[in-house]
Image (cartoon, rainbow, N blue to C red; front, side, top):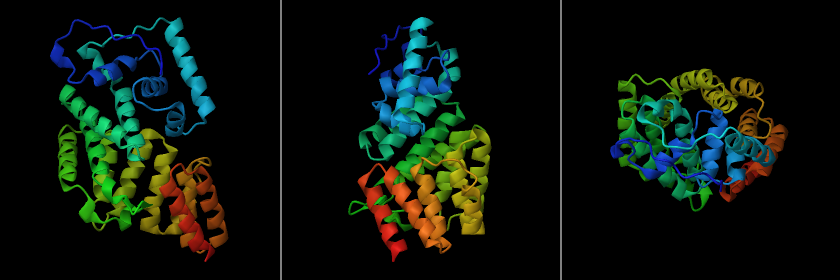
Length: 309
């Protein structure tokens, strides 16, 4: 882990921070660093993530992330950036990085490390206590609760189960209710940010039948807010449900995510639906090379076998 100096207490009321770990995250997310550096350093120092896991979250090679972390630590040392607990009025300027840290911890946990998912949910709850009037805080908590509610249904007999095939009786109804309450709170605060939009999409995904035109529209708004190629990929999937696989594939082919597992598995699935088996097989093989978990590998191997047949 990084050799971070201990937090120095400002003169603030003790009630300001409901959680010591959250306090440390706010301390490490110093605005003198760029947003990505804040998030990466905090994930390394406090989030329990390895450099490889952080690199995967940022879609860059591990060596690239090592260099970025080294540059950020050098800047801290050379600029003598103080690591102290921020005063309450300074919390909003650090919020974007803190939300990103908590969400990436959750994502890593959702991918398999249950302890990290639980930690992220706990941090999210502490954030809602600390900053109850920030819509994005409630949006993030809603998103994590709604996603986590489906955790038990994502696997059956150790095998990955896609959302459309999941046993809804295994979804956690109490977590869904709490997630939607958090989303309603975000809407009441006029939230329109990236976590509120993602939570709205997650909520729509839990409806039956799914409102694909609305999901596609929300992904369009999320793409506008983030400029993210991964979001564009998800929008393409939704568009394929609305306008057909050909329309979805046309959007996918405009996206540059060649080293991203889900780019290749998405493209493979669309090609499979279009009857282009040889091309689909190539894409599934590339996705398999990039897969990080055994259930995902087995799922992709089954898809390969189906295309081969």
